[in-house]
Length: 385
Image 1 (cartoon, helix red, strand yellow):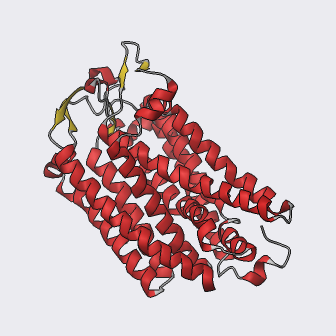
Image 2 (cartoon, rainbow, N blue to C red):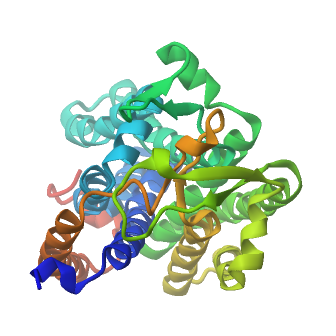
Image 3 (cartoon, rainbow, N blue to C red):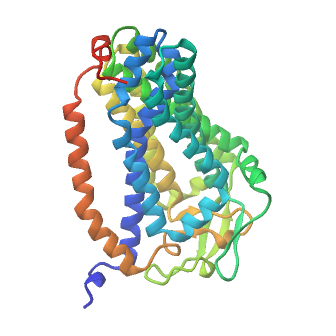
């Protein structure tokens, strides 16, 4: 028997579906608070020292946190090539804006302290705000569009075809439900950033973060519930009619897909999937309670649970779909028909089994070294951002 055949093709596909979800959730849990802190910066720091405290809570860790984003993109590229091609074609301008916003962050970290000018530093503070708020919003908009269905179709040679101009594609993403998903994402990560500042800062900065986070947390809960009701009563779902062979070759054109009354019909097939939104709501509610009570470590953990539940609820609800097509349902991409080859998935899994634990160990070590609060004394000693 060939070595890679020890694990079935269908099992590898599910493993990589799980791994992709884990990588995206890890990105939201870690770099998510970086984005949230950036979005909070102009509002929780009233003086230059306070803003330096805010920046230094994330300055030493943001690069390591962004590794999860790179790993997630790499996993899509290598494990799910049709998904990578279709998503980056349709969301090209949106992804460009996300990357441009993320690039603002290291530039702002580098140049903010170069001049002792109020205008100069305030400008870079707002650059950090954009670098945090814009990606958080657009990631949610992307998720909302995936739930609605993306307007693409596959040609007989599997070329992804979209209609309209590049600007039209971007404007077309700004549909009401997608915007609601974007607001939920933004508010959730701002709340996560507030939980981080409550944990890492002290005094007025932490107090303001808790006050703002309590409000954004409530908005997150209301938006999350509203999105669920909208999915239940106002948005059609997708269902496999002629499912491809789980161990067969990847060819989306061999799949037959039909529209259903609601995505929530999936819960009748997989009742256990309701754990996602339940955990999301519990985490969000406990985060708000923790922020109002002034708790620190437990609040951050509850916030992470809320993110885990919110993101996993989308993945479990849509399984086995990755990106449904709104104009050609049979072109929809699923776990069973859009993966790399059996051998490729096996080799990637072998490499992941070696390197992912190393990343986790290194990340844990970094956070252990940087444990403790950032104080005003820390940022005035000449070794800070």
